Length: 546
Image 1 (tube, rainbow, N blue to C red):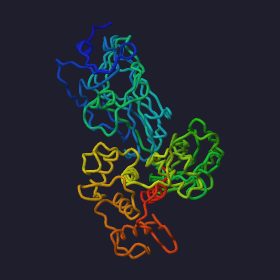
Image 2: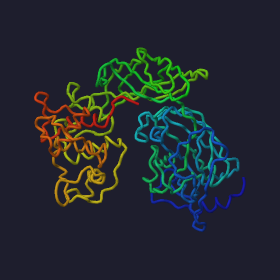
Image 3: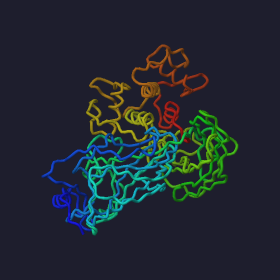
Image 4: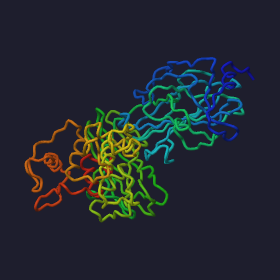
């Protein structure tokens, strides 16, 4: 056995431990801290040429900051227990538009030091999180794994070759796992920095009894940002659309058998012949999804063209008992692609096609005129339901609720507005709706309802006000609609809201409240049921799509 290095001795003797309670084996999360040696910053870089043309990362720099990392370690020795370091990449948000053939994962090492001098094991796992809900659910499928031996090093970027395909528009989850090495006497701290990151850093540890990944900020280390990158090649096939069912506004119901028709765009300079196969369908407990037809034929797709599978598409039957809440199935499609200049190649998985299962709210039956629109905004994370315990379709939409509706419709379910500062006298900064209301104000969508200024958060939204809410949120504060022409008998032209109301009509968002005579009912309050189609049509929300 070799003699301990100076770094090892300092790291063990002076570990800075958080105030978290001790866990199994006397272990807890700690930093390697040596007050006698000031923190260093190393501009580390991977060795050699990247294996592919595309690298995705949430790290703004590759700098490694010493004494900044965290690991679950034995509180007496500083030797590390089991630790898994995680990042989740939403490939579509990062501009990756086709399946990604991963060839390597690179990440920072602040320090690796093993007592025996033979190196220590480390495993990289690539996961497909089909429901884009990491880490809230464990609906992950392992795409690829690679185990390497990490030799002693510090302030480096370690490159691990690994082969796997991440599906288009998927959530690619990377786990870097190190086993419990307390008995072996090893030290390993992941390379991190305090520079901005575009996604959260997560950690889990069997040794410290945290089995579900948690943001490191939640356990006391908000400035610990893991440096981690994924490199590969993007396939030139992009998901274009998804049609489920044979009729407009179809929503899957348990007991149905229905067609599933994906469409793909060929972004290559050469034509491609595509054949699709299913493998597998991911389903929640209680439901059973059966492939009645597990193959699709897209024919030959010309460069820059889009095609679906026409008359030769998938067919699915869903039986069983629907669980409560938001329920999606995922058809995991593989593609056999033959480009005119290359032999046939299988892309697997190519895409996780989400198939929403209706029946989400007991107070919104499938016979309700607003049913498909309510299922749509629920599926898209715009709403989780109302105060009644269901969706409450007959309740009026309040001005404070409208702020959340329009911003989530525009920005997506993961959007969080900046913290409130207390702009409106009737909306305290600690009100849960305050950040949403103030963001609408800051964007120039609303000015309030009176002096103070006040917002009147509990007032109902009127149909005439709603037209402005929708169009200003979508188009921006500088938008001015075309002049009115006098479409509705109960909306004088000109008048304060006429231009906005008629623009909604001209865009096909509304047909009014009466067809004959053509009326808009501008001063009627908007119900939650009515709000759903306004949101879907204004912001182009899709229930089934890429």
